[in-house]
Amino acid sequence: MTRNDLNHATRCLAAGGIIAYPSEFCFGLGCDPRDHRAVRRLLALKQRPWSKGLILIADHIDRLLPWLEPLPAPLRERLQHLWPGPHTLLLPAPRRVSRWLRGRFETLAVRVTAHPGAAALCRSARGPLVSTSANRSGRPPLRSAGQVRREFGDGVDLVLAGRCGGLQRPTEIRHGITGELVRAGAVT
Image 1 (cartoon, one colour):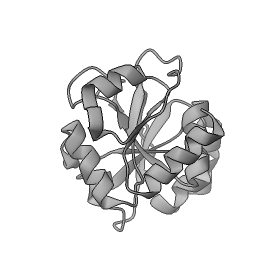
Image 2 (tube, one colour):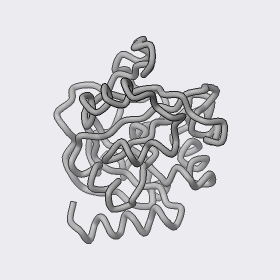
Image 3 (cartoon, one colour):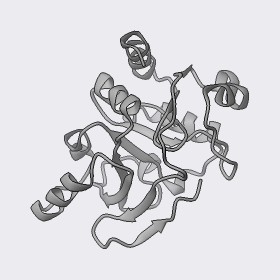
Image 4 (cartoon, helix red, strand yellow):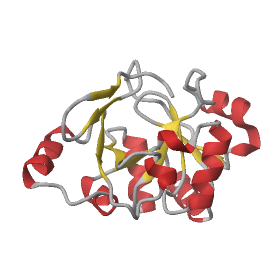
């Protein structure tokens, strides 16, 4: 992604847009998590029930901290060793975090992405992004910009070109406190 691409994406996000971008496994759909209208629009586009919740990605753990309950020092140290990387964790979120993001849960799914383009996008936006696989709920994930354009058309405001990372399946989702496996790389 060029600086121009990142600037365009940042402006699109700030205006309430939905973007598609390459991530670790597939293209992701994203928006500004503070923009409730954009989040609801993304859920409708994807045909995903709000109750499932969404993932926030960031380029650094510090960008996720305002969205989480205070993390105990041992957990924070463990996260420093896991991230950046393909590890999505459910961590306790304060009640003020929208149900459109948390779903029906007391936790929020978060990841510090290792994908250089997705991380650059978060840096450019100066905050986390909603990140969900670019697909209609229950359908296979899309792995190219062309597939995203064909599937979603004008429903996505900006599609960024680029290559997906080398993962062969979506990231696992684990409970960040208990370590319990919640999603074993299935697409939702």
